[in-house]
Image (tube, rainbow, N blue to C red; front, top):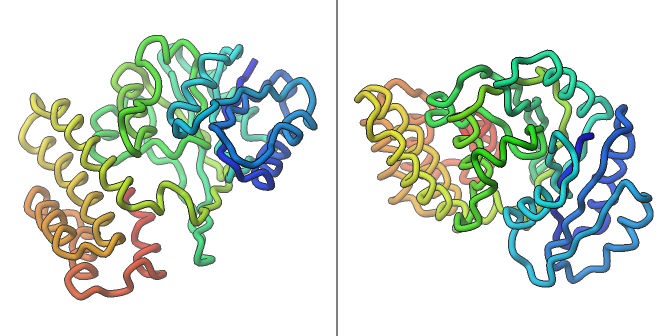
Length: 301
């Protein structure tokens, strides 16, 4: 069985669309664990309308998506766990193709992800295909190769080894978990666009203050992991994280902190052209949160 963990906070119309994309999956042996994270809107009738395969668990207070996903994992019955955000939808063969990869992979593969298309609020869209598989722990520290939660399927026993989402982080809990998984397991992918990610105005990825807090907190955890690595690898890892922090400061309108971190990204590893482009954007205030910056963001998360 595959368990789908679906956290939701309000968004009843989007929840219905997400559940419909699960209902259309080509596999039948599935269950959905919908974790209502203290919604003010009434959503139980939507979940009940999909039948017994959709289970409803409710937090009485809003605890955040990471806590909701952990609750879903605890209540999941499946051998495999897939995640779906309420504002995203899947292609009908998504789960089947991921399960097929697991069934033909070595036992050490703990995670399988897919490609996705991102629909931004401003109407722009871009695709990201998988790029890395196997033992990608160092690569994950340096690049964040594994895609967002709605693209991911994980073996249930992996969580017994590495734990769940870190609820102490204000954001980027998924990236932190992928790091821990890749430290212990190999990953694989389906090189197809099987997920539609639909950005919403209240998305955490648009709450740049929370995102920056998460960037900084994750960077501190990464520094501990990178401390014993060779100088060149450590420099590339630090450069990547300074770039991400600088990019998010620029998106939040904090030009000077953006320039500081982007400058450090260039000093640490001067061979990443995107850092120079972002530095120029921050220096001159070009196209802040416009189409150009949105386009550039797809090349480094």
